[in-house]
Image (tube, rainbow, N blue to C red; front, side, top):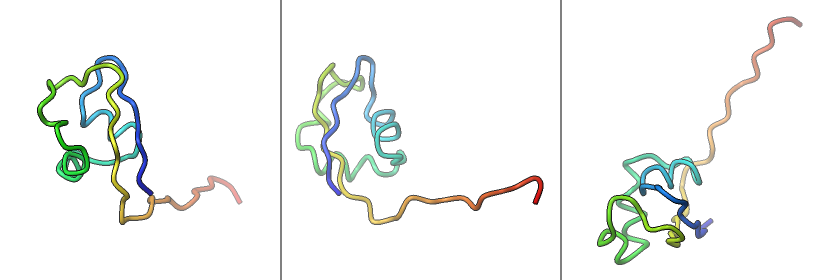
Length: 70
């Protein structure tokens, strides 16, 4: 699912995509491809910058439930 998020004060692109979508630094190239001109901005995104996050092909990872007692 493609969605758009808005940057907060002091956000960098990698912090934004990690916080909002759980994407990793290696996904920055996909985000930049989906947002022409975003790379021309400063390393700290201007407040209120709209960033389109591309759809992820992987499903969110879930961990098995660990119970200490049965």
